[in-house]
Amino acid sequence: MVSVSHNGFRANILVIDEDPRTAQVMRRILDESRDGRVLAVPDVLGGLRLACQEPPAVILLDGMMQDMDRVTGLLLLKAHPSTRIAPVVVMTPRLRPPDMEAAYRVGAHAHVLKPLQNERLTNALQAALVAGRPAAALS
Image 1: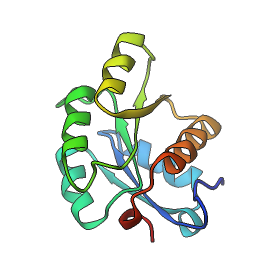
Image 2: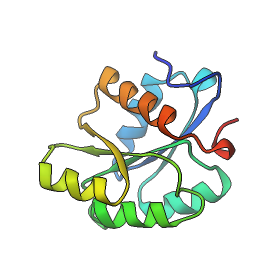
Image 3: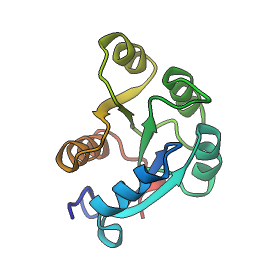
Image 4: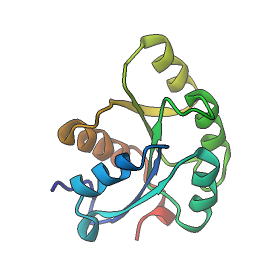
């Protein structure tokens, strides 16, 4: 297991993905007792509701959801008070420059390829935690 905690803070990592296996992969990669918690929901609206009770330090957003495209999802996340300042890492099966540029313009912090790989994912999460940690999201 690897650590994505920063300066001793435990992070809530919000995973927004229709595929429950993504959260399972995250839980396998992270030591939740040391790093924080993986909170998983299948859609952006569920993520916004959960973030009201459990503010995330980082959000992992599926870039290929059936009910909402990544740009719309990012716009909603960046407009909501509970998720506005949390860095968003977009997970995608292919890195297409036009899609990435559109996502960066509306607030994406980084992109990672699916299937998720331990080292790349943890590097992206660590960079996101360093870039911006909402104090309320850390316990």
